[in-house]
Image (cartoon, helix red, strand yellow):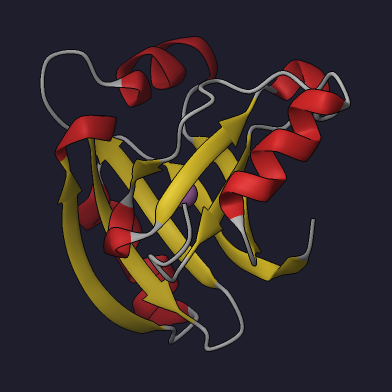
Length: 138
Ligand code: CO
């Protein structure tokens, strides 16, 4: 499996508007825009440093995983996303090594990337997302 870099870190928040000023005004990171990812139950504000993004995640819809996360842990780091060259290869390799994934099949996340999540149990307590930008390969 080839890891190309850290694509983004994602931070769960109760209030996108309230948290935005730290990232955009204080740190001056370029705001890329807002995106609703309905199948993941999130609305995200994306900031781009040009060397990795910061995504603020808030709950969207009835059964948002962010709601549960906020109840349990409050606002804070939610996951880290690594970009891979070939997500299907990565899934195969991880499964062959006994790594627990949240789901085996890549879904479409923010910005149209293919994504899967590795269970924190298998990743030192951190929720790790893998993404692949291009849509080729099967
Ligand atoms: Co993410």
